[in-house]
Length: 310
Ligand code: NAD
Ligand code: UDP
Ligand code: UDP
Image 1 (cartoon, rainbow, N blue to C red):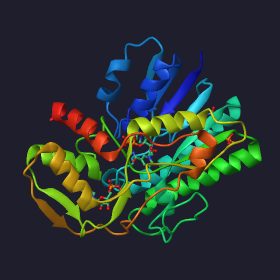
Image 2 (tube, helix red, strand yellow):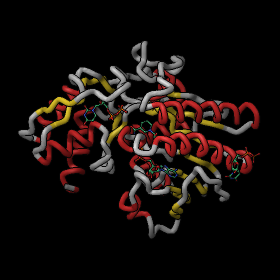
Image 3 (tube, protein in one colour):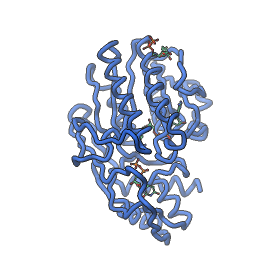
């Protein structure tokens, strides 16, 4: 039995990962400062004999004994990571240093939840891992994008300099049950607005695109990456190559919810990427992974969850 540390374990992706690791008979130490995470996401695990929750901020050192680390702690929604941008950069950078220091001391494997945001507002389309990105260092998204880029650098330097075994995963927009209703990201916003009969808020003209991956596909990819062959570090893109404009997404949500909500056009936020779509050849060849759940099917499951919640 392995004892596995999940930072950000009370968040959206982290709580699904904890579920899976517990199901696979591991011990899980979930570390979270509950900034965007919620106890309700892990409520059903709190009494489990193999599950332990520790409220802690990873910008501070952490001395524990574990066999593997998944480093997911970091707010992911623009609304939340821009709320306290300095803390966002600290979480990515100091958090990575502390978790890498822990991995180095214990000589254990560590996986980093990186992001497609390292590609910024991309000049090439779709984006392979070899693309170096087009990121503003001074804009309002930089605290997140540059924090995650620096974290990747730290992972590769701890690997080269100290021999730490690393797995770096570049996650593209992922959605599903347990997103916070006020998370602020587009899928949860549209669904909650449609279910409440409120206006659907489209930023800009709605022609910008994203590729949306359902949470179960993401967690499968994460698990395969952690257990990939020795020496395979990534970075590897994990996302769904299906590409949709925000208008197409809004129309699908309206159709699936049967809502009569109207579209409301609001200004496009600064530095908002125009398009995003992963090349997943590396995930296919190294991890034998590709997403299985279509946007329509994933939205149905997510709508189901929000219907019960609100
Ligand atoms: P989330 O906001 O639901 O989860 C993040 C968790 O980290 C929360 O529980 C939060 O309380 C915790 N946290 C934040 N700062 C912390 C700190 N300093 N110390 C301890 N805990 C802290 O977001 P999510 O969608 O589950 O994202 C999880 C990870 O995946 C993040 O690192 C994010 O950058 C990455 N990611 C997610 C997506 C996506 O679309 N969901 C895309 C790319 C990357
Ligand atoms: N660290 C930690 N837990 C550990 C080991 C290290 O939180 O079990 C932190 C420690 O605070 C340090 C950071 O990780 O600041 C980086 O560790 P490293 O060994 O690389 O650096 P050093 O201690 O030499 O500064
Ligand atoms: N967006 C939107 N309405 C919303 C929330 C987001 O039109 O209520 C747009 C946003 O401008 C962006 C896209 O949807 O172009 C995805 O936004 P999200 O915050 O989900 O993720 P990210 O921009 O980080 O990919």
